[in-house]
Image (cartoon, rainbow, N blue to C red; front, side, top):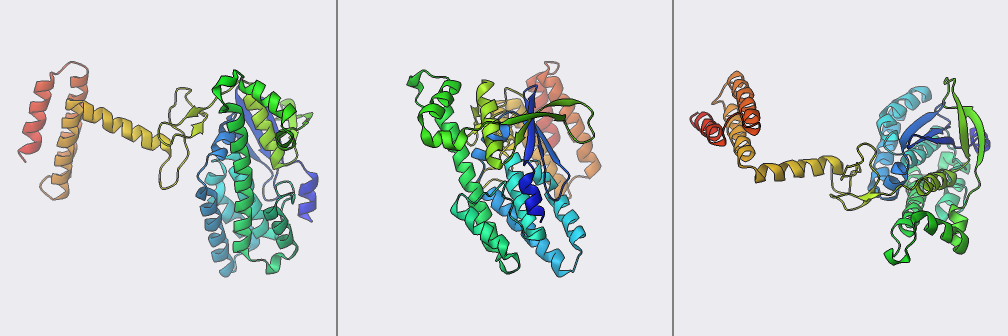
Length: 348
């Protein structure tokens, strides 16, 4: 059985280098899936991700599989189609990917990976039973159980981060000291987050000739513990997103103030929403930019309603942008630019 093979194989290997956590997942349907993210970024994003995101993707994958099965598509073609569909989503978050690929395991061959679902929780025990009778199992029940197991792990990650980074400020302890104290004084914390990792020498990735020290991560719990350990021991801290208010660790610029999560009710990540709001405030506070925006809207509507040719609009837009930039650079006075905008956009 493939599940037995997976049980004997570590879920992943990881190593830290230049502020990045490199992780290589080993899965049934893939030779490997490699991630390289800022240390702590995936863990913090997973802990505070919108609850419905994974559920929505699982439902979409289930619908795609059902549609292809009804068309009597071969298993290999279904596998390729689903993995192609999921590829962008799999890159979003390491932990997100683990649970999504676990669902793919069940859809493809009815197995439940014990490295991800060891049977410790109610949901995991029910999943193990579903795998024993996969042909008669209700897929929607499996969706709900995988989602429940994922949520349980997400809440565990969130509680650990809060305990280490958001404890009472008057304790005068660093996150590293809080971690050490909890591991030695809190029995539950010790049970959930203490791990002795095995290390070995190995290739950075398949086909790569360079060798490094790899940490063996047998289960999803080891994956979580390892990233938390690196986050704390390397002295990293997270910020609070100025849009959603939740913690995040910048994956790009260190001065970023918005996270990359798509929160409940939004169709864009906070980084894009926040940048848009900043631009709007900037325009509203600047009479030159505000006048340019209003003139642009008038001209665009005029074109849409047939009062202005598209080529004429493009010529006006290019000239307006050039004059705007000259005005901002001090080469054209605000009075001259505003007069030009008013004269060219209102006379048509």
